[in-house]
Amino acid sequence: MPGSYGGMYARAQGLLLTPRPGGAQVTASVPWTPYPLMFEWPAISLFPRRVPVPPARVDVTQLLLRQGFAKLQPEEVAAPRRLARYRAAEQEAHQGGRGVWADATGLLWQAVAADDAEEVRARIAQGADVNARNADGLPLLLVAAQNGRTAALAALLEAGADPDVRVDGWTPLHAGLYTSTHCPTDMAALRNRLGPALSPKLAAMLESAAGPDGGAAAAVLLLVAAGADVPAADAETPLLDLHATRSAPLGAIRLLLARGARLPEELAPELAARAVQQDRPELLGRMLGRGVSPNARTRDGHTLLMSAVAMGRRRTG
Image (cartoon, rainbow, N blue to C red):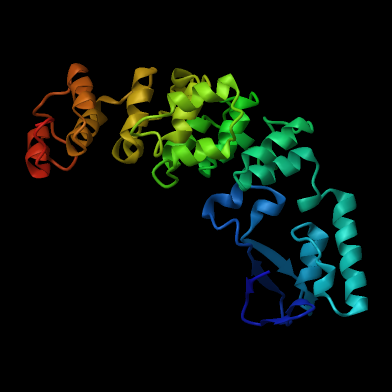
């Protein structure tokens, strides 16, 4: 398991940490969780993770095994006494249901972290709670949307996860809208990953999410197709704030507006300008129909006509 620390060095038996006064910390990571937002996940999904180490030489491998953050590979450990300690550490984690030895719901979190729809279904079949929350009170579906785990998100929605779950006014719709530009989805690949035997509900969700904006707005489109209540989500914490208006996929914004999301009057010119810049006459027509003046100016001082001329847009201009 790779790691980094100024005083750490590798041995065949494990990773050791040389001591220093006052203690130290080691940062460990695994290849399949490179996403910075994964701090929301429990147990095995907390990598990269800081493991506090006392001011003495510590076998980090033994520490990770005891906490359930790793599994033992006996053939890689030559020293019998060290192997015995590792087996005892792993058994302690197993008996305590920690990390990789978690119950069905704990393993469901891991399956979602890996965006493995088949494993998500398997854990749900074992009785895992699709509406589970982690130690910080964050619902599984919201964290899946926030981290762009669209295959797992679809499988959770198929199994009946609540698309309107909220934490302090924040819903899966908010999370999916904010991360959509950073986590694009290949819709054809998503369909393949969900397997050939699609339920009618999931097939209808995927059909609704198809289209030119599907990949960028997959999480939002899937949530809406699963019945997410847009006005209710929008009531406490606006979905279409300045950040969303300027950066979220236009297909998702258009869908949310059609389903009742509010657009603050002062942000309407910003969205109309984006429609011009991306040559989306249908959205521009919707904005003009809502009363946006063709001479309205964005916060940067540009009119719609100026944006059209600058971008060379003939259809919207």
